[in-house]
Amino acid sequence: MSETTSQDRIEGGWSDWLTDRALRAMIALMLRVPLRLRLWLMGWFVARVLAPLAGYRARAIENLTYVWPDMPDQEKRRIADAVADNAGRTMIENYDVIGLRDRMRAARVSGDGLAAVEAARAEGRPVLFVTGHFGNFEAPRAALVARGFQIGGLYRPMSNPFFNDHYAQNMHLLSGPVFEQGRRGTMGLLRHIKDGGMGVLLFDVYDSAGTAIDFMGRSAPTLTSAADIALRTGALMVPFFGLRQPDGVSFEAIFEAPIPHGDPVAMMREASARLESRIRANPEQWFWIHRRWKPKRQRRRAAAKTGP
Picture 1: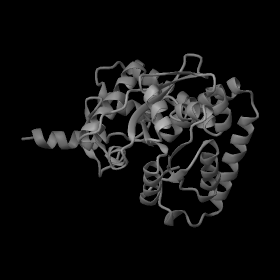
Picture 2: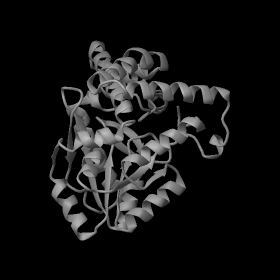
Picture 3: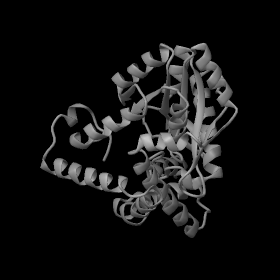
Picture 4: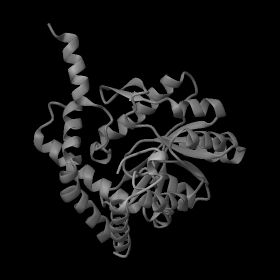
């Protein structure tokens, strides 16, 4: 499923309805399975079935090759499979957000930014958390909600209108307000933050309108939306990460020191550097299956510049 516009999602056909029913049935079945078995099954299914068939495994290997061309093929395949496993676990975890919240109640919460976040709540100062598709990006939010925080955010709408209704309802269960990604949703989040609220933005998806920023040693278009919102509202801009632990089930929620306000591009460079540091330490936990770069296009441009 892919991001699409509200206009595109007004109607859905029989294939959308049938797909929605199949997905809902699978999710309902998985949620009846004990937690550890559920996570193992979803990780196995995505890594061994879905990722190879949908091309996610090939894309992850392509991205790994683009960033680390000297990495042995066997290691790239190992990371790609681990990434898909984590994606499958994350998918079903985020369809049980209340269960995730309850699990995160006892999770380890660390980092230099935690005291700043607690002080901001006491002062009524807004906070904008920034993160990427790493570990489970909902886990830190769930940890804060379990501790009495209200954290809003944006979600990417699905192309299937029937499934999107269910998906959107699920996104609202953990905490709110939650807005659909797009101009209207971004303005809604901006108003929420401006009124002293807290929210989350993920910034690590390719957008051709973004500013070219170095990420993992390669140029990656990056929107400055997060920095712009923080500057306009006076919000703390705090990177956070949900680091999956070796057992595949538990997490550490890490809240890093706030990024100082300044030039928006410089702020996003710092946010990118914070995420990059996490990826280099745990490459299996970042979603290499996403289109963060467009390697083939960028290779063609480089060849054209150095051509005869």
